[in-house]
Image (tube, rainbow, N blue to C red; front, side):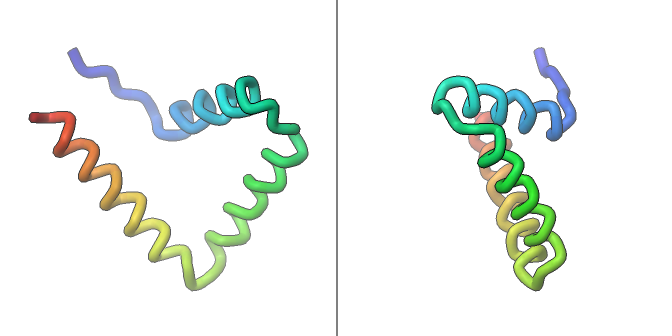
Length: 65
């Protein structure tokens, strides 16, 4: 049985668990989100995007075995 969730929902759940279990402050989470938006406008964005896509494809290939 496959369940399909949007990636943003998975990230939101992970963020909620991290804030809850690791006792991060909300201002730290907001700062990291802003950092992500600023990184998206830099020359590092294609590298981050390609690395993320490669990592997801490796995980998908591993879970299909």
